[in-house]
Image 1: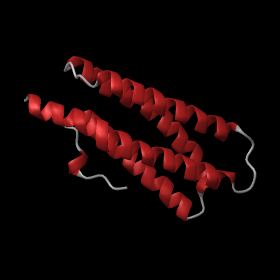
Image 2: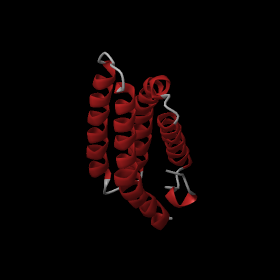
Image 3: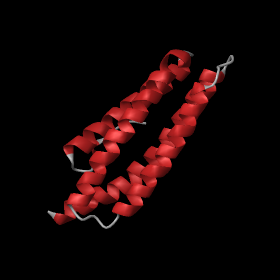
Length: 135
């Protein structure tokens, strides 16, 4: 997936964080293609965990400050993503047999791509439109 300005929400910090997420997922996809998942997956999962906590707090802060009506829906979506991330981290903590890094990388990629499609391209863009129409 590639970032484009069409995906901008209109809040510089949020957009910057989204760009970084796209970059990290592109790196994971490249690692999968180059058969170096084992060296990439743990760092990607750590990034996703750190990213989610910082990014969600930032988004939710802006939504509260602007009295965004979709705030609760966003919070629930964030909770679902964090739950999926907990499952991925639990899987990553298991002893790895041959091929499991690839499987974990592919699953992680799918979870994040689904998140991008379902959340960023829909819910976050609704928030971006709300901000643009408020001005």
